Amino acid sequence: MTFRKEACIVTVIYDLTERKRAEEEIRRLNERLNLKENKYLIFMLEDTEYGIELLKVREIVTMMPMTPVPNMPSHIKGLINLRGRVIPVTDLRLRLGLKAAAYTDQTCIVITEMGRSMSGIIVDAVTGVCGIRAKDIESPQTLDFLAASDVVFGIAKVENHIKILLKSNDWI
Image 1: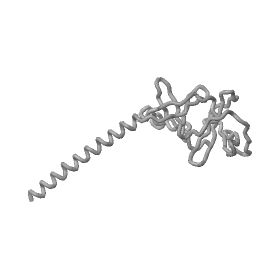
Image 2: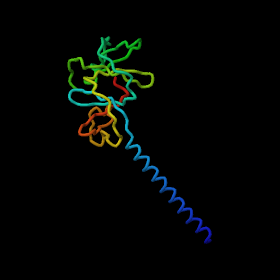
Image 3: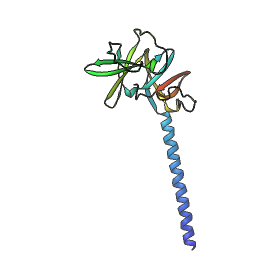
Image 4: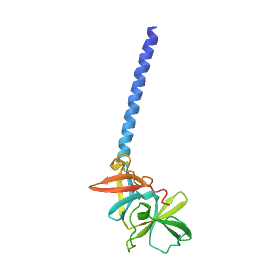
């Protein structure tokens, strides 16, 4: 009888030790994840900086003629022919519910790629690329930020600035 109790105690101690190691490993991996820095393409819409994951950006092109498509939502500006590929283009201002603005020489189309599908988004100006750590990104749900939650991925705090990070999946 005492042998069985000792085996149980040894088993419990072993299990607790393994659990503690597992928890330490999870804590270590979480810290590494929080320090991991992803690159984002940063662009302007009105006076606000937005960003999308750089890995999803195929290229940036100047404004070009678009072929309008009838009976489409107002934010879908039309189709472009980019080196033989037909790409739908969305005015991101209108998609996000911002007011329309005249296009300038800074206005450009960011071509994003998801798998084999490409789409373009019209932005006011591209300002650069920024590395943002996961720990510096707040979820829109934690801030009770429900507007455009279908496109907003997170709110990034970079130095003393806020950047709204967008999901780069479906602009249409």
